[in-house]
Length: 337
Length: 66
Image 1 (cartoon, rainbow over the protein chains, first blue to last red):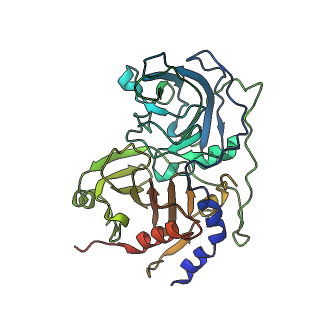
Image 2: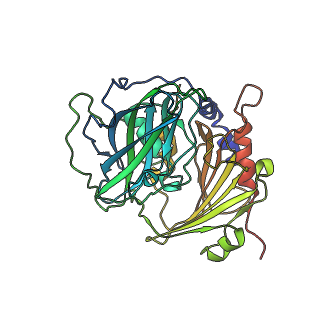
Image 3: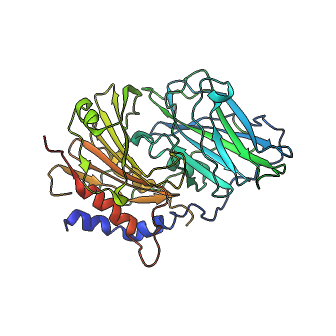
């Protein structure tokens, strides 16, 4: 076995700690006060953007409740907000105290632009959830939010539709729902929600949207522990926030992907479970980098969080390896430990 | 990694919720392998099952024959 693999396996103690988070029903320790009873559909706090050096910022909390009446199986609520300028929709954090929640597509409810599509119900329990666009440049969005909010998250499967571009500087829409159980009496239920949006700046200089600070529970950028590797010379972080794709293409077969890609995409000869090929995508960026993504997935509802899939991404980039790119994973918060 | 030149770094594997990731760099390429869904959870009997699965996928990546 190559030395470097052995070196990686030397991280097993950390892996074990992190592997303990694999359960999606991990015990939650909330550090944010529980949501009080609120009038339905009205955000109660002014969103506050806070941006870090990697270009991530967060707006929220938006707090609201969704209630069904007797005999009503589903109820929805649509959030509207101004998307900060020069940002992409990188992730979303949701807390609910009700077990059967789901994302709804605001577009289907008559609101545009919708930031995300619908999902099957989250039957993994009440608690905190986070998910990202699924693109590699947003991979640490939930880590950023976890550190900022000092909160561990269950990670949901990426949504089938994600409007990463959104509509910077204007109003965007996002919808949520609750499902009454059990069938088929559909007793009245209420879910209290708290939602944060994670944005990824592609501006050369961070320009978060001005907003009124939260008087009660202001969000402060946490101190993130330094990287554990002492051999890496630390310096000012010079990460250039990624830009939005200049071209985004979807492929239903691998040959189409290979023909369109600027480089030969490496393919896996081992896919656990012999999962069938699902789809592939190519995203090109203004800086010349290109991301090729191949998704293998078991048959079934693509929005089912338990559906097995393997996501392989390869990005050709001229971006140098920086202190941040080497160490960002070391900043991962060990959830639920 | 995988006997190829150009290896630059390999970040930690991490697992959270119902997904696990392995990210690394080879030459000018950033690569990532992610598992989503109900894969066997790590336990005392198989604490590295997910890590091994990620490594096996990573090691099997090949440039397709022309």
